[in-house]
Picture 1 (cartoon, rainbow, N blue to C red):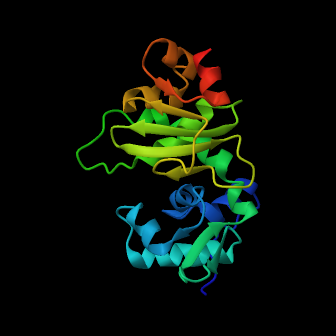
Picture 2: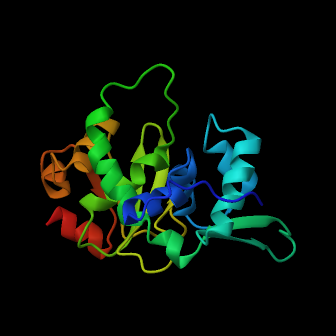
Picture 3: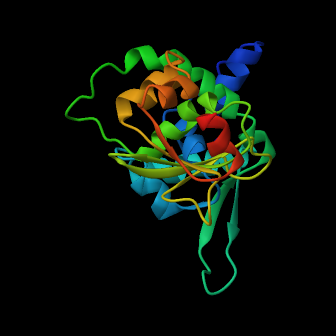
Length: 208
């Protein structure tokens, strides 16, 4: 593979940007925080990236120790990409970047793509202190969060596998306000902006 481009600066921020500063790299990390993904799944959830660029970024990330590629056992027999422990360490970086970028959202533009699970990381901050699986329903779709997750996936697209500890229903405006820290989850529940169902510990705590 060609050598990685570098800022050639003896600075930890510059060194970090040598690894993750290319376009699409951090968004690939965002998608892989959901767990192992096939190339086709990544391409579908990264609208605007070309196949050549995605393949190149994945090779770079594997070389730099952020991701690993493995083959699923039969009958799947497909290759998946997943984060290494070093790649997972970028979670707080993405959360901090998302917090900083909330002010840039404004109104959704006609050209803006959206996936329901892109709201997972901001909402995860609102669930800090809780532990369990939380299913979230927006008009744009469903996703589920692993609050207090250890080494496993941080979130997943679609309904939760099995019975979640809580189910939350809200609109995007409320979800965005929660991600910005303008509203706490308990206040949103109290004000009727978030509907909570379920009998798990998280559901009971939010309704208390």
